[in-house]
Image (tube, rainbow, N blue to C red):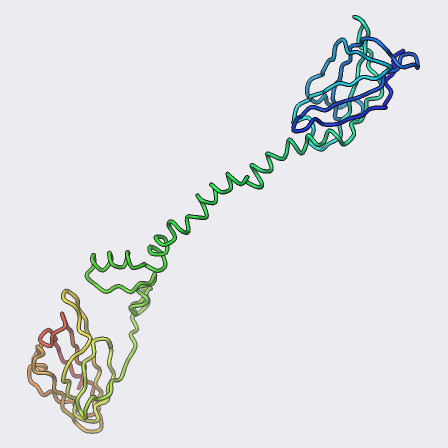
Length: 303
C-alpha cells in the first residue's frame, strides 16, 4: 500500500505561475525509494467539485528516502483567491494510478500567484499604470489646456477672437455674454411687451436732451419743453426709436424741437406744438445713424 504523508512544502516560483510541491511518500508505512509516476489534479473542493485546468503527470520521478519534489504549473488563472485542493495519483511501473485520499488542501503559498495574476490587471484597469495613465491624462485632462479657451469662447465668454469675428460679421459692438438678448434689454418670451419708463430732467430750464438709450419717456409739462439735441444715436445701418408721453400740466405749454430734425405729419410740421393742459401728447422719434439730420419725429395728441 502506498501512502502520501502530508509533510509537504509549497512555494511559488518568483514571477511565475508555477508552484513547488515537496512531499514524503510512504510504501507500506516506510519511506519509499525508487522511481514512481505521480499525477496531480487541481480541484475547487475537497471532494467532487470542478477540476481546475489540466492534470499534470510527472513520469519516472525519483523518490529517495520517501522525499520527492515537483514543479507544478496550473496556469495564472488557476488561483483566484478561492480554496484549492490537490488530488494526487501514484503508480509504479505500468499499473493504474492509485488515487490518494483525501485531497490535499493547498496552503496560502501558491496565492502569491494571485498577486502575479492580478497585479498587471490592477495596473492596467484600476491604476492605469504610469505610462498609460500619463497618456490618458494627456489626452483627457489636457483638453482643458488645448480646447478650454475655444469652448469658453463659443459658449460662455465669447472670447476676444470670437467677438472680433462676430463684430466683423454683423458690424455691431456685441456684448461678450452668452445671454446677449437679455443684456440688450430685449424680451426672451412672447409675453406682452413691457418697456421701462424713464423721466428725464431738463438740461437747462426748459431744454431737454433726446436720449435714444431711453426707449420710453414719461414727462409732465409744467414748463415749455424744448428738445435741443439727441444722444446715443445709432451706427450706420442701424435703427433706434424713443417714444415720449408728455402729459399736459395745469396750464398749456409749448413743445419745440431741434430744427435739424425731420417732421412727419401736419402736427409735427407746425411747430411749436401746443401741449394742451391735462391732455396727453405723444411724440415718436426715430434715428438712422448718429447725426441730428437723421432724426425724424411724428406727433399725435389726445384731446
